[in-house]
Length: 240
Ligand SMILES: [Zn+2]
Image (cartoon, rainbow, N blue to C red; front, side):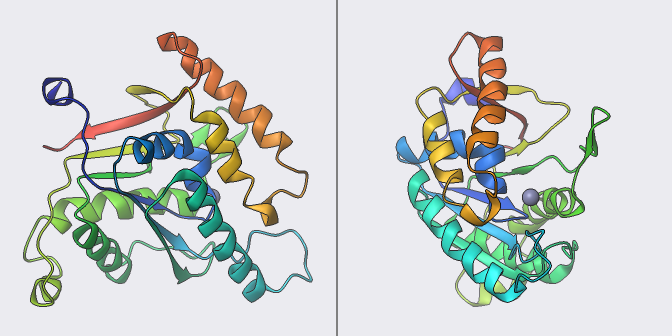
């Protein structure tokens, strides 16, 4: 309601995701759309993705380095202004003060008005799949860093001493939700989402085709709900 009254938001965005390719899969269309509209979009990836391989002989260190390069390339495709990858090991993400300090710092640094992540309450997807622990944890970390966090001077007050200011986050968008309340038109940006995802070569042992087909079907079905070609669905919280 508030957004309709004032038009779409135009301020900076911070994406907070667990793994290097989560942003593209969950929200690549809307991230590209916002960047094309002139919003400054920044990404903070909370783990280095060093377990994203079924090859027992793969070096986790090398995989992390490869995934960092892929993440930067994918961000470039989406028009993202900056991407940072924390050094936490894949599969070991915990909602700690140290991680919330890093997220709160980034929200304050980029003056994020919108934070986009994934829904931490989504555990089971039908009877076929359950959500990765890192994904659920990333969602809670994102929410807990916004409120109470970035807007409160008593949270990580040492950052204020370094010249940063408190930052109120106005809205939070959560992908991979079982309770979406927003179907966002991404027509014209679906191909960008796939082109960005295609940069994550280390994760595409069977090529991009699986993701292309799966995500296209999902985007078309979501789009049909609002009469557009492609859409992504989110649970959007208005904190303003
Ligand atoms: Zn993931």
